[in-house]
Length: 183
Image (cartoon, rainbow, N blue to C red; front, side):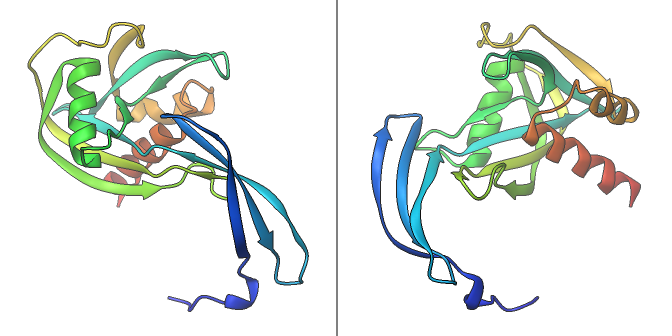
């Protein structure tokens, strides 16, 4: 591993909140570049999120088809959602799996932690792989998902290529599983 080169680090002199609620905090940070240039930079802080790549014994992934109004697009996504203040990302992943699709997983393994838009947005995302799916209930979240489907892993690259999978958490999760199984 290469040591951090502090000569390229930005210096933060302070920050002020522009907007704040339970979902999003917008700040203006007073930053200084290594060359001495100083300016205000927007920073957006969002709650953490967790999602699950649930795989069955036939090498299929459970995906949900949903509309995202901000981009006004439909797409396949992994079950997942925001981490509540009083829970761990693993607990949130398991809760969202149950709420959105009515499943539990025999095992839940953490595979990735990432920032989807580093540089301006601070929002940790944790991806888990769940195996041994078991349908235990009807989904309690009825307003977010149009349908769910068990999708063969071999079909995932085509869904990415045609733009039906475009969510960052879903991309990280399914591409991790495909790479892991190809190794």
